[in-house]
Length: 367
Image (cartoon, rainbow, N blue to C red; front, top):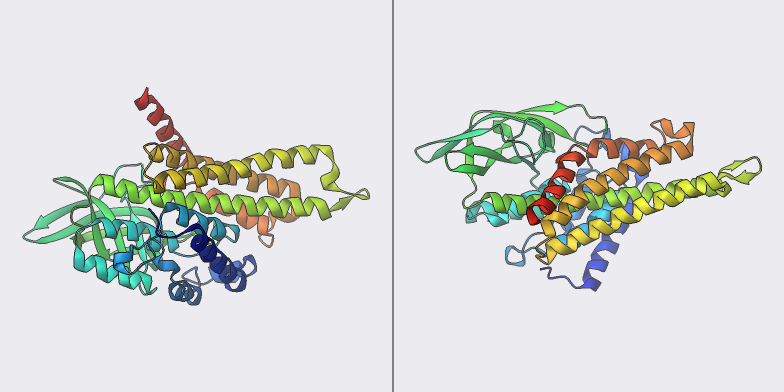
């Protein structure tokens, strides 16, 4: 349960929105993602100074103590400008995992570094596809009191810019999570269709790792669900933004002496797109509320949000290019950036088909 009131959450969102408007608008996106790290370190430091990197850190660890609803509100704003940063990996996924483990010293050191903006984390299932719904390909073995990792983790989000990597590996007692220094692993940077997404393959060959004590598969699943809520909110915010931009274009682009938005066929298209936008925002917020309040159907709603928001973003951004015409096919136009982001984002944590199958399975299990 969040420690923030509705008024405090709104104030936090207003502060974040002002920061993005002044320091990380869409106009600055192309220059930022052209940098090797694909994000602005100075903006990252400002997030730390404003306390936003502490959003999901518990109060006893000197954090804000936010929950999934607070995260959803922040990420919806971030999605409107396709804000490029390792926020989800570091300030959400890694934080949730670290707080659930029993390594007190590691936990406090890492959470403190995250809050200060000094350490970037990547988190991986260790699968060959990058999906969290596929099997882990890494193995961990213990010699005396030391753990070592072997294998390759593919398509790891934020791996090329990470200082530390949290990764799942198979052990004799089941799936466990380990912490590894990124400097000890071999990280291969991957080219991406969307320049704002940072991906890498990570190879481990007898790499020293620290196991996160008492972090079982249930805790890992909860951390993943929280991250999926944040990512769905990001996609919902992006869907809303490109829709608004497209509607504005329909109002101002004239053809045969009248705005093209006045033609009935385009009105119908816009109406259909509005349904997609509202659906994405609604399911994103419902999943966040269910997860924050510990509802029994929380995991089901998270799966629904994971595929529904991804699909809505894909469909609306594709229609935006069509409605803008030839100009939107160029990289110089914002619609093209949204389209690429929508396409690339459908594969980051799992495909829409995988989450749809997971969602349907929950209904079958309940029957």
